[in-house]
Amino acid sequence: MNGDEERGDAAGPDIVIITGMSGAGRSTAAKSLEDLDWFVADNLPPGLLPTMIELARRAMGAVPRIAAVMDVRSRAFTTDLQSAIGELAARGGRPRVVFLEASDDTLVRRFESVRRPHPLQEDGRVVEGIAAERELLRGVREEADLVIDTSALNVHELRARMHDAFSADVPATLRVNVVSFGFKYGLPVDADIVADCRFLPNPRWVPDLAPLTGQDERVRDYVLSRPGAAEFLDSYLAALRVVLAGYEQEGKRFVTLAIGCTGGKHRSVAVAEQIASQLSGKGPAVQVVHRDLGRE
Image 1 (cartoon, helix red, strand yellow):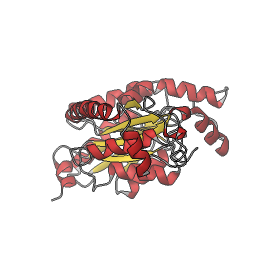
Image 2 (cartoon, rainbow, N blue to C red):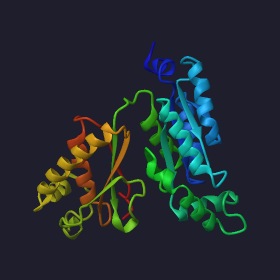
Image 3 (cartoon, helix red, strand yellow):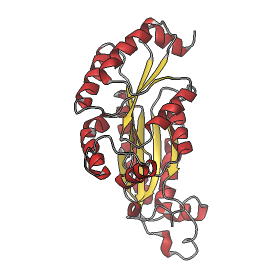
């Protein structure tokens, strides 16, 4: 008997709730889990979630992994969802919540491209519906286990993110996503912790280094050898290990560390690579994403 079947017999199925902003990619995320052999229930009312999970539990391992896609259908959505999660937790089966996010500009463009109204805009504009939904889902987003900003992701990239997080081959341990970014392009909205590298000298003003990136050895050596760099990394990594251990003890499965500089090309890239290197092989699974590399 494999691990999934054991969970289905005893504690019940592995449960993931996919929710978030309309237009942020819930259907794509759901399809990616279907491709990984999850049973996916689309547009499930939160109140029916405990009933569905109980039926799956009675199936004795026949349905070991369930994903429920939930969107805003009423003003009671948040209360109903929190109540359903609480009921499942009381039965020993707390689900993981994936919240899909995107910027207002991105969501407006997506709704305009399909010529469909936002479900909450009523007689107003799309942006008003987006604002109402964002406010309604604020509490859900704060409690989510994994927040994915799809503003800069295409369909294939979103599927890859879901596959990385929920593939059956992925061990059930803390996963850390280290993201470098440029402050001039905005903060990553899915970041749990943000660090600022702008206190380090900028290689952009060194003629030989300006065309290169933080992935080049010369830039990396320059950035990491500047005064304060080693002290920052030692202190930050020490703090991170305490925080990550606490997250893991509390059952958090996904953490996004954002490392920023002005343009996301030199300092943040080099520091993000160094942090990921130091964290890898010492507990959590780590991957690196350079969000703004190539934009300059």
